[in-house]
Structure formats: C-alpha cells, structure tokens
Image (tube, rainbow, N blue to C red; front, side):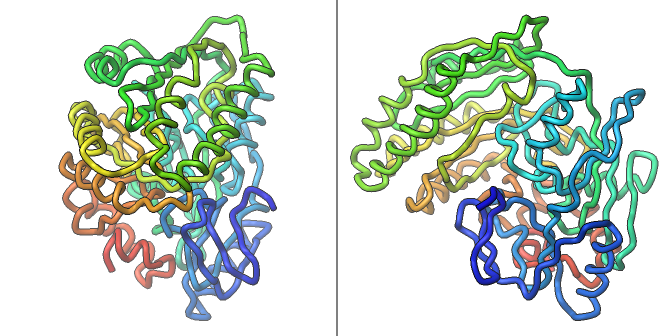
Length: 439
C-alpha cells in the first residue's frame, strides 16, 4: 500500500486509523479543468466535496460522505522563477518530492516540519510547521495560491491579487475551496548544523529564553515520568557537509527511533506499569551528536511508529508555565505516557487562522501510541493548554468549537465572512468544519 491512507470497499481511513469515511464517489482529476468539472457536478448532484491528501491529519478535516477528490495526478513543479526565488507546485505534490526536486535545482524552503509525507496543500491548509525563531510555518512561506471555488471557477490570490482571500486561504482547512497550485518562496540551498544533546527538564525550561534566542531553530522532547529531555538546535552553517554516517543513522533514526521505539511502545501498551522504566531508558538512549547537511535531511525524519497526537500553540511567553503544569499533572496522575512531548516555536504571522496568527507562539504536542487509550491524557492536557488561550493544530486531536475559536483568533470573523462569500451553499462543509467554524 502506498503512503496514502486508504481502505477497502470504498472506505477511506487516515494515517493514524482513528478516522474513517465512506464517500459516495472518488474522483482523481488529471487537470484543473477536470477538478472544476467534478466540483460543479457534485454541486448539481447535491453532494458535498472534500479533497484529501495523504491522510496525515488526526482530525476528520478531510472526511466526507460526498465526493472525495484525490489529488495524486496534480503533482510536480509547474515553474521555477530564479529571479524572484519562487517555485509554483501542483497541490497534490508530496513535500518529500518537492524537497528532493528543489535540492536537485539547488534550492530549498526556508523551514519545514519534521515529516514530509504530506501533500503541499494538506500540510499548508492545516497549518503544519516546524520550529523557528524568525521563520514560520510552511503556509507562511506561500507567495501565491490557486483554488477552485464552489462555483467551479479558478481563483488566483496573492498579496496583490485577491489579498483578502490570500490572508485566509493559506491556512484554509479546506473551507474556502480546493487548492490546485501553490507558489512558495524558496532560497538557494544551504547547510544546517544540527546539535542534539540531552538536557534536564529543569535546565531546558529555566534556560528556554536563551536557548530560543541563540538558535535559529530550537526544539526539544520531554520524556514523561522522567526529568529528561533531548534538545535539538539547527543553525546555518558554512560547511563542510558532515552527514550522519549510514550505520549510525540507521542505529539512531531507524533502530532506536522507529524499531526499538515501536517494540517499547508495544510492551508499554500491553503492560502499562512498565512505561516509567521504559521512559527512563528511552530518554537516555540517544546520545549527543552533531551533523551538517542540506535542510530537508536535518529538519525531517522518518516516523514509522503510528500514534495519535494533540498539539496546541500557546503564547511563547506562556510556554514554560504550560510545560511545568503539564509535568505536574502527569506526575500526580495515574497516567502512563510512553511517548515524548514535543516542544517547538514559531514567530507571529499574518494568516487569519494560522496557529501563530498575530502572536509569537510555542507548540506543545502530546502523543499516544496508536491503540492506547488517549482520552484521559489528552483531556487533562487540553485543560492546561486552553487555560493559556491555546490554539489547537487544525489537523490534530482537539475538542474545541467555533465559540472557542472566536475567542482565541482575533480574525475569526474575517475568515467566516469570507467563507460565506466564497461558499454560501457550504459545498465544502463536513462535520469537522461545522464544529470548528460554525454552521
């Protein structure tokens, strides 16, 4: 099976396996014209329409019982503008293919998330991000968008053309139309030196402001039931390239981070009492290392262990308090958490429903191994996140609705008004959008 989440007999499943849908029909358009025709036909048949990428969202953001649009034929680079340093790509292009193609052309995105299986439109529409002091999410690197709206017409938008659509559609959660192409800002290929090293929870939280300020990209993982974290700093480098050796890379990235980690997760799921001990061992398994490579080889890593995830963006100045509350909650509870908590940052951006909209943000992601009950942990974590006016990632588990979002997104009304204009009949509606944006 390909990396595209799927299922038998017309059932669609997401990557984590926690969302299923049975669309009335599936369409795989080979051109923008075919996509427009499919949208018009769905409207004529009284069916809702959703486009789906690789199913990496943990929410039902792409689920539909209407027409499911699969974009895998709408892939590849349309054009590269070396003078203005932009690249225009078809919406169904997987990030992995984009990253590799750009590298061959001597180009790169400035920043990216930690996996690259998703399609460019799926990743940007849900606000996928990495970590960065000055550089924002993947959507924040968009210079132009092309989307098919509810009447089947193709709308181009940028800072100059339909700017009000551009302000919203970069993180549009599939509510405004179906994206067909994205223009990204790129830059000449550069090198990053990554420095990974263990650090205690107390040290990383007390020194967080300095660690954030001194590094272009800082992130860390805290292992619940321990006082240990693993930190990662990525900074630009003059070189030379010093990639992780193949054998060392296999041991650390495949064997420890995927193979042994998977085995440990299975043990933990079967015998939860072993989890604190496993956490102590896991948190000490990865030793310090430094390597220098091209961006996508540093930012991204394979994720073969399947999990369910919740992630909230809190104001950056509230991060340390949020983390300390999270740790105190886990320590006091009977919870057994086998997956590390991931912490990243992003600068404020100007996208209406971006999790970093209008405020410098820090991200706290909690995970549970697939098949492990996660509700108690996620509910307790969500209570802490929302007390700090947290904004959940649109593609990750959360329980919030339109009333909550109207309070934490100053530009929420701007987005919903634009949706009323572009999709008055709610052709792109589904249960998830009804909850998060209101009817």
